[in-house]
Image 1 (cartoon, rainbow, N blue to C red):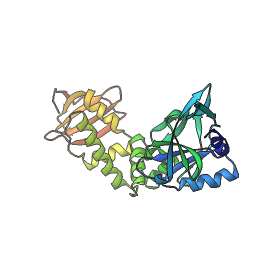
Image 2 (tube, rainbow, N blue to C red; image 1 turned 180 degrees about the horizontal axis):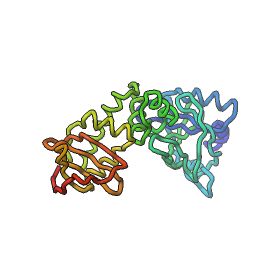
Image 3 (cartoon, rainbow, N blue to C red; image 1 turned 90 degrees about the vertical axis):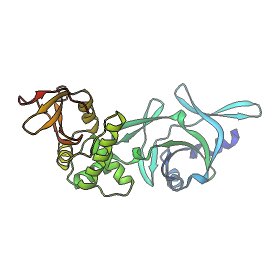
Length: 274
């Protein structure tokens, strides 16, 4: 096995298999031969990958494959991959310490080299790890879709647009509003608050003002409680976030969302419950 590893060492790649799809992501050293082979591997299905009884370790900054032979354990060194192919498209792999850093809708995620498994694909040695497909869409693609739809780019709209693109659904205001409402109601349920779907006005305000669902939840759980007699609404106000939400007096439905806002004099302190 050690001799075989040496033979395929120049073809060594990293393959990231998306958890919800079978389209692999191949990554390897940049050379003309490797690019063609990696593109081919990038279109293979999971059934064409044969897992081996070996593991990845990092020794003094050098990645190695540890495998068992008749004489005991052996180690095979290989170079850090530099080029990746995601669904047939090239990307440059960014390495930070012993991990690959991948851009996501919400920032970045690290995939440690030791998380990969060793396998054979079409006679070539590969390393395989499963990753969330949401993390493999270039951020530029998502922002372009939001910009084209005239939707403000924010943490929440980026996540929603990414999900829509992956599901083959159009990125437009109606679909973003629908996803926003569903995600907000679900997030509230997780903390024990039963919400009705927000009003169309509240959704439009949240999207136009770049308000995140996480911030809305923070206001709802730790904001000060008031009553607004002018609009007959309950108010949750967070002074640190300078943000408030207004809730229908009779049902738990958000009717107004505002950020960069201060406390209004007409609000009356009231210890209401969700």
